[in-house]
Image (cartoon, rainbow, N blue to C red):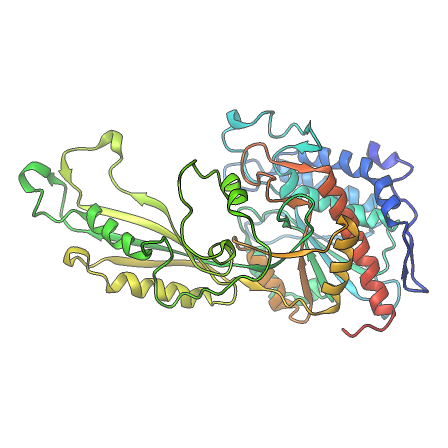
Length: 474
């Protein structure tokens, strides 16, 4: 048993009364009494470099798995399993049966693997030495997603291992790199069968603003290339008439956006965004936009980031500047990443982009277009009992009404879960915030967000159980 487990407040007495269905006011003090233990265990977990990428040792991933299993057992969970799929780090599974036959079941999701640290010279402290900062802790993976794993474990501690709902746990070990688990849930729906899910791999749009992520953009990749010559030729002797492949490709890429920077590909959906978004100044700071550089596109930021398409050139094969010769380029290739409206089929969107590029004849040259992988977006229905319970819980945790935001990135597993359990409500919230530096240097989590997320999940479980006990419509 770990040292934090000896904390006398670790399994504080819960304050939800199953018989009456009343959510008592003592949850705040229960959560506050748990914070020291949750924070200590979070530091232990964040000290493990559990990077599930090729080229990294698998041992730290297994070490993180073992610690989480031990923490679950200490929180009172006895039915713990493991799912092993080809080429995939272990998926921790666990079940806590519902206290009564009519109690709902909630699935709690998180992942215990992390991104590589990148250039460690850019960190203010070693990435796998959790370091205290003002109001929080800095370490790789501490926000994405180990804080959220500890939020779920902390919620179980808050109820002494006997929550007022049935619980299913999925803690994934290879989310960041991607794995066979993304497509697995529809093949085994019993594993994830539930009434509602809390996907804790997101967080607040800004610290202190409770946020439900209600939409995720879909994605697609594509390669486009131009071949014009058998080999490079002297730019002095042949330039001006010999077709330059790089110029050809650049002319094609320039057609993808209009003069304002909006995507100009016919068939890609864009709609107004009615939820909360960033201010321009917030976004400039978050994205690190160079002073004096205008933002791309027109219209609201929500449309540009979440409910409209985005096209990015993420790679370019061309002669590098430091090895450039005075020659006409015979071959050039670009990789494009497309993000699409949450409700648009990404395959349909990718087909529209392919059509656009194949119709072009820059300088009369045909392009070779190769479609890549796609990932669907997601848009949540927000009018069910779980969303009502979550709104109440987040309001209680942060003292203000929650807002709805979206994620510009994709979480492929969400769609797999939605297919496996189509009737279940999917809630995305957690301990991260937009300033956490996810995937970048000096990633951090704030104690205020950790405490808020822990209280929110705990209050959600109690509130959702109370609603079912009172006969709320499912």
